[in-house]
Length: 335
Ligand code: UT7
Image (cartoon, rainbow, N blue to C red; front, side, top):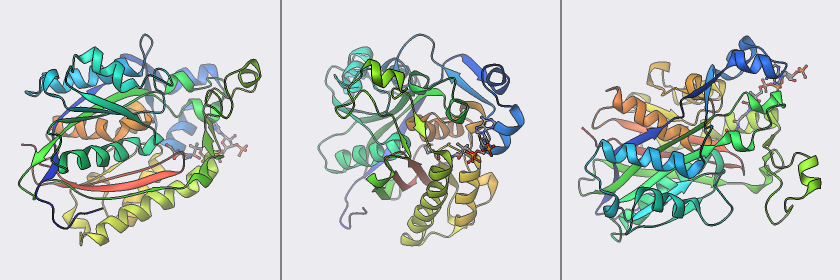
């Protein structure tokens, strides 16, 4: 929601990322399931993904925030809030945010985890922005971190080729110049999507047991075709809607920053927005679907490559399990 009487915007003032070294390319998947490089590339756009061999989601999140701190003036003790968007928390509790706090030495911070699957970063960014805009907090770190390999069944060709491990973080700070920062959001949930994409076991509905293990309920389940249909429509519609709501024409948008689940979903979204391919941030080929990490990973890589300039209008868009989906409109404020 856009507030009418805002006096400050929340703006992204630093970025950071972490991807594990270990690469799993399509050839590797040819050796473990009945698939092939050509199918994977044409159906998804993915060539490689990363695997976190030693360590958990909190380690990747901590590395991403440490990278952010290395490339900015932020000190750990200055951080007010840490929001970790993830569906692969280290444990159900305590929150991964607590573990990250300790690992980076953010001794004055509070924080929490936010579970919205592939839309997690967008939901966390809007939440963080609201905390900044309230005037109560000045330095909010939003990190998307997912160790998808921890919940992936590497015998299921329908899902195992899709996902990878990564983390990426942004720092939100107040901007009195309302030309910059997060300007609007449209976010949605629809629980009728629960059967199409989920991990059934380990929660209060189906506590972990021998039976849930036998049924492989501790892994991602996805009805790919069903999710594909609603994702194409959901992500394209919401991105178009936020442009219309804010009077933005395609030439006013410097980049679409889409969740990286499938290149065909991304292409359909760009087409609906009337945006050419050069104005779409893409790194799905290198990392696959890293769930909450995809969007900040794109932002970090494109910014560091000098491709995003101060004053650029960006439309962030995602669709994920829940269903959850949405779009955020922001103007880049970093030099
Ligand atoms: O990020 C959160 C939200 N998630 C998404 O947005 C994902 C949405 N879904 C998708 O991206 C796509 O549905 C997939 C990439 C998961 C699958 O692509 P698809 O074009 O929808 O394929 P499909 O599931 O309809 O399968 C087509 C065929 C099937 O064979 P038959 O039944 O036609 O003989 C599958 O068994 O492709 C087969 N198939 C594979 N073949 C080779 C499925 N997975 C593979 C594979 N390699 N890895």
